[in-house]
Length: 230
Image 1 (cartoon, rainbow, N blue to C red):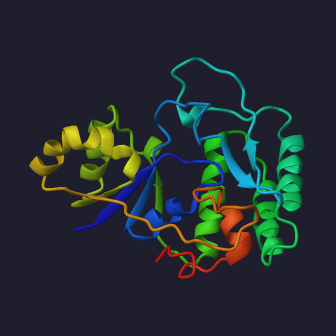
Image 2 (cartoon, rainbow, N blue to C red):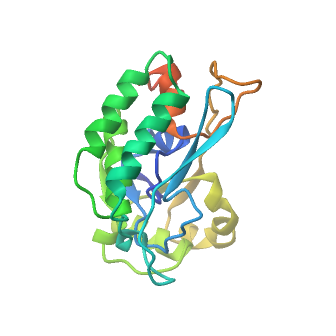
């Protein structure tokens, strides 16, 4: 009996991603589905000292239309953009209490050689997860040799891993509800994530949630309880 979550590896994931990880017995990176350069797979946002939203985008090599996330390679100039991303985060979140700790984590990841966006995202997620004191094990869907679309693919992963509970993010509810009978037939119960995003002191006139994790952690630190992840 086990509870699993399955989600695409995103760049500088929001806090709810780590809450999902903390609530399961195994977390699967859904890296064998179609890449979308307009999604969170290669970009995210932080807030600058004036309260404006700043996009951080990872440049990737253009490829065929239906390429999987696991097949997407980073552009040759990634040494340049990673320095730019570090600089942008430093400038936008300067004088926040835990900026130095966040930069240490990012430096430790960016110093490693990566060729694919999935590997970069997964390494960042794993590093932040461990720093938060969360010990959930990880798997990649691309290593499981499972084929399928949307709910069918998720169900096959659950079955192969022997899960009897699937902890789904709210974004998947749109198509899962129409296919939930498939999970019911296999005695797998679907639970939808209900994450209460913490409100913390943030620059600007109003608080903005669901930003890239460096924003929250620069203010709150790597404290899973304080961040309402556990």
